[in-house]
Length: 390
Image 1: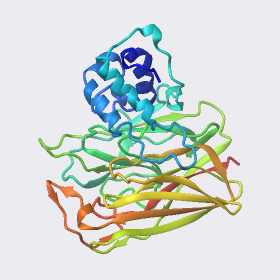
Image 2: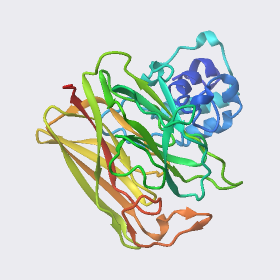
Image 3: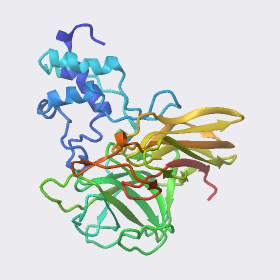
């Protein structure tokens, strides 16, 4: 780290950090701008520079809830204290731009190598949310508004959701449908395969090298959108899109799927630190390549372990659960089976931990499993890689 604040500049010190950790959401390309504003160049950063420094110094940004004491995560966006301090020193140097010749590009993330999407699909029409806690399903269509059906077997290597109205879209579930589509609160039902879950802070999901997920001929996609945004000023119409990247030729070495592991939820009013767990077996020949924890507003901690050859280790640990920052954690290295995955969820249903809805703090009540934000879940999606025998 530079020794003196007077030497800190945007080009030499700050720009590489922002490009490595921020611009995937704060993109200069309107198509991929998920955050409220871009941070792709000096002018854009200077428009919000004090807020950027505050968000970095307080740990609010970049969002990375997972603790560093588990298996190494690919494309880890967490920042150590000494890196965060650079932003404060830059502010002390009056946000100096410096010389562009001093800029050294950071190591490229896998997402930087994706290029333009091979296909972008969207909701069939604009949709106006009716409440601030609504789940509705939509078929994904081409630009003409016709639900898109894949004409051939296709291997998906990466995917990203592009919310039409980010202030209202809390999360999006991407479902692969065997055939036919419908719309409504539960139309993406049990017959569909849940392939991806987007939440604010999610970057493009990129599968490991030589790996892909199969989209069979005749398949289509639906998304379940959870609208849970700000209502000040009224709702705006949403038309969320999904970007796909595919293998250009050949077939992958490994096929990626994911399996939900869900635990029981029953929280009495006032109950504190209630835990629930579940697990799954990973057979020989398969490997765990990622994990996605999911819960709602009363959860305080989410974690998972994996046991291989009698040795247990941490798979992921989110020690301070935040309903609004739920990310996919793809492992830097896979864990080969046979293995046993065990998951744990911790909640707090005390009066002190109740959510605030429309300016009013709720009172403790019986909480059970359910999809609504005021219900609860104990769910970990486990990403599995298997050899492609096709």
